[in-house]
Image 1 (cartoon, helix red, strand yellow):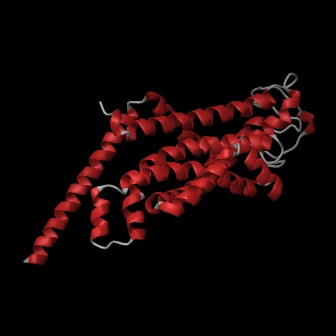
Image 2: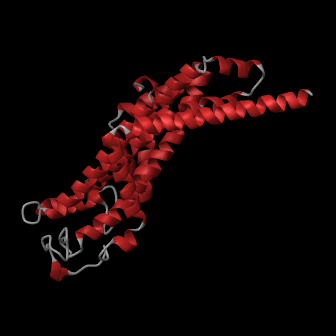
Image 3: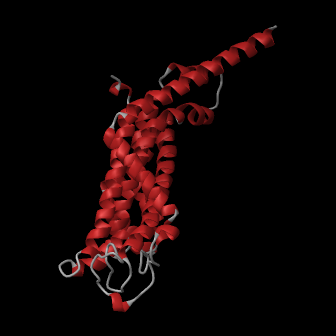
Length: 300
């Protein structure tokens, strides 16, 4: 009888949690779709992801094909965004550049957020000397301008796409660690954490199964905010010559190569700059919408 009773209670609890989860998702989606700019940002991001995945079929020309007879051709029906100094189609290079920008925006952000989340939870949960050491290291990282620190790492390791992942991961974890630490300090005082400790649940289990899931909302917002920041950092590093190297169709590198011809062939620098503007605005609108939708104080 006891086993049947326990099974009934467990089934009832699971059903309640499922209803609660479904209701929460519906409520977040309702608040999110009311934000017109967030919906525009989400649609733009989806389009960019589609373009990046199917760049091979969408691109009208080979982005690496050189044709010196077509140098600096202005925008036309054959080359919608014109050509560059080597006669390469600008539209094709921007389409392929979407892959690089989204990959560099996503991978380093995920790596830095993973590092920051682990260190933030450990720091906030244990406190004491562990908290002091981790937070002081985070303060040291945040004390340096992020672009300058990334440049130092790139100069040390060498200019390549993979080293950009390392550089942006090193400079990006500190902010996430501080946000997650603050969230952990609030969550660990809750009753369900005290109850878990009282029945002998291990600290590692508490951090993974109870604290980390409750940090997902701010982490999701940080992800959408961190991706455009990483894209801007990659573009800046490539513009300064320590990021992606030719002939990689990086938007920052394209702007760097086109800055000398800004008055004679402005489309070479303006078109990749406009692409960066669109992607960064789209992710910022998406992040703002998610923040408002997940914030319980935004309920009306």
